[in-house]
Length: 415
Length: 83
Image (cartoon, rainbow over all chains, first blue to last red):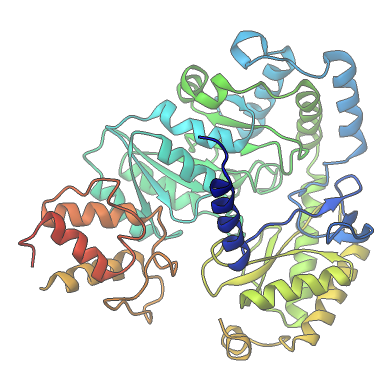
């Protein structure tokens, strides 16, 4: 079948529908390195505007850190640009294994295998370790990549209400006849910034003989006193059977992810996980720089401590200004606006004030739970935060929402 | 208990976070976000066990699960005597 006019027209109609629904995603072109002070071309064709970035996953401020960039140069000079191979043919350098070992030591697990991304780690993990005799029981708000991995796996699956331990227990009871049970959760949930109740999940897993899998992409490097992740924060180091995480956020932010955990499960991924087997190895330059990142965060907690202080200052500032925040302690700080149009208008006005944030609304978050999600970084300095707070206050005043509670904002703007 | 009550009760227990929320015969479930397509699986399993039927995956679409009325139609297709 050729790409006929009719075929083209049907796709054009589909895209028009996405636009009409207000769900069309547009890229904003950044004319600088990733960081707090960036130059953004938006809308496309406009001259780049200097703005402060409050929406990157650059939690530790390492994306453009001089030491990391220097390491990347060294990696490029000594190990070349590409490997032109999957891992198990001729795509594994000593630095790949070195990085896996550093991740294992940092996460306090038994072994680690790198993947091209954490999306790939989640897509490949379950079908590599579970069969149709098993069941996966997932928190309803897990990341889309876990949903994809679940769908690719022949094991049965079920879900439990977000962070509802009574519901999880009920599900574990219902699935006692399966050979293996595996509970799946994000460590930190990316839209609300809340932390999974891993201590209680581990208790239930022990009681009902289940394994526990955590995607710690929004936690590795900064959650927990030594930044190891939610398992450290919740006091369950060594009790999580599989952790997946990313190098694409706090750990330098380039690309790559991993599966880390029980030795045999990791080995099964090496043998069976399709994104590991059939996708190119992580580029040497990324691996070299990520090794440096692991050295930095293993040597000192300075950056995660600064991030923690920034988060506290930001939360206090917004609360004092009268915003309605999702409670929490992670550097994901959602400012609740409830109404989708208000969230979009608010983000647009903040951009005009030099603050770069994004409004999120249904179907990315629940209907009637539209918000601006802000994310803090160790690269934010006090003056950046103060400028951000002043802009939020100015725009909040414009829309008359300061000091209003949920019901009052909904009464004013609707859902 | 009527089929409508059985299904409505299950949806209330299994999915609703807010007790004030109500589910009527034509309340949109999936398109409104009350039930997401990922979590739909437990409703499908419940119906299969309750009415002793097997709903093929190709029939278990988000559209077919979007209201209690549509769910009842789907069940009756495979269990004409289910009430």
